[in-house]
Length: 262
Image (cartoon, rainbow, N blue to C red; front, side, top):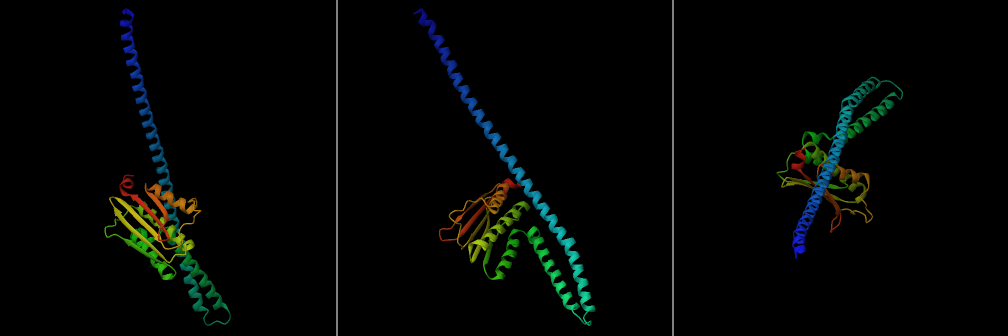
């Protein structure tokens, strides 16, 4: 009995120590898991910042090249065209083929000027910077609709906001990529782009009535990866697929609050 009386307090102490070890281990595991989550969040935030910086640098370079094309090359071509017009006037009464040659050169210069303007606008669309996303997409729709092969409708809610530059630029680039893919591959006759803002989230819904995505679509192409990268850099989500009634759809969601805090 004396031995039992001595062992009982010892057993109680061992039990308390065992409980303490279990609790400490659980707390250690919780702290370790929390630290892992924090490190993963920091890693994702760092990768996102790198992606945003990369896209920002690319867009700044696009803007610089577009400005140089417009200001320098455009001015040079305009001067060259002016001189050609003057030469045409002087050679009008002269015999020979000089007038026809000048006409050909003038046509080449005008063709170069038109392509220079097109490339400059593609690099940095002036409507987007001056008027906003809806107006820029309306201008694209007008050009496509005038061609007569496919019709684009752009619809925006009355309260659609004036977006931050990177957000509207990202949505413009993504929709341009989608339009380009539809024209090239879908065989569609109609495209609809709906823009809205709900509960602080910008939503861009794109759909066409074409063939839709093929069964073997993997999403590993450069164009699709580029869209995913832009959406990820803005803290948003991209969902694509085929509509039950036929055709392709893409839904982009961009949270404004997350982006405005950057």
